[in-house]
Length: 127
Image (cartoon, rainbow, N blue to C red; front, side):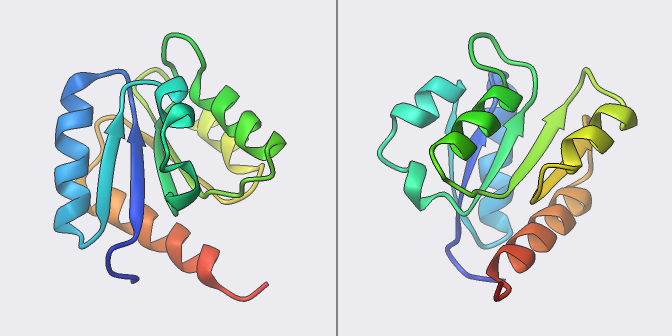
């Protein structure tokens, strides 16, 4: 696991934006939170992100739309989608496009850590 890997949390729920970065820091990574996809895209840290923890349903640009926009820009950032409004079928569809995991809220610390470790490890493997 790379120390200091920068992970962006993008969620319109303030409690998630407060809790998840702290948890990610406990895992040994750097983290920052954004309240919307638009806020993340406007930040100067887009190219530094090694992974996104991204809510699916947000006002404005959804998590899925952000995934499409990043792909359109040629940015390949692994994504862990999180949702309180989904089910396993939605998660299965989201996993198909590439380096993606999907967690249904509420999820455990261990589940998030396992997803982060899996995506970061696979994104660092030689192609």
